[in-house]
Image (tube, rainbow, N blue to C red; front, side):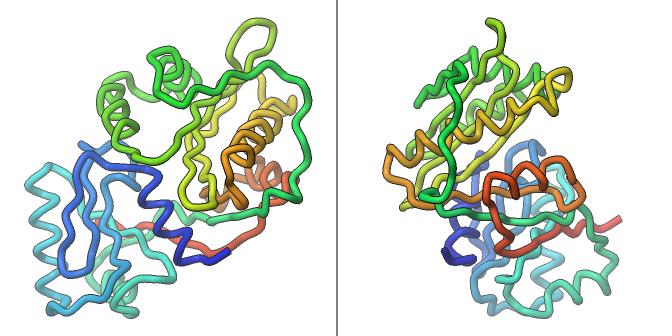
Length: 245
């Protein structure tokens, strides 16, 4: 497992509506839905003068009525970018951890009722927005974003007594399955449903040829961290966002 590869997969597996490559930086736009899809990802070598480049990025995002948000990982270029943004008044938020696991060490799921669709359905989208309590105004944006993912997808729903109590997304690229939008109904948490859903999704990924899995989690989300560690995920690297306040 390689951290730089996983960083590339994280970008590929969660698609924005549009992307602009600007002197090695990947600028992503999606009408403000999720930081990841509306952020500057400076993962390739940069040649332009940094001060001017930061100003140009601010102007490009302002033209879309968006703040310029930088995703800072161990792979940024130039290497002093994080410090330069700090000096320009950009503050950090949402410190996160990227975790990965080799699937041959993951246990099999129990016999819970699950459904995995390889194309997006209106039913899955409705369940996600209900469980996550995300604003319905983003539904059409998310539908377009998910349709932009060009590799194998698995939209999973886990049922309990006839109702969906957890859902999530797995995206397979190369020999990895990335997990996204893992959510359990607040009324059904701490009962093992999230774990079983993930195990079913990893089983599906393994059947599709995946050897590894990766995911991203907020660093202070203790329940999620415990769950992922229990399954076998280990920390690969950390990242955070910067925005001017």
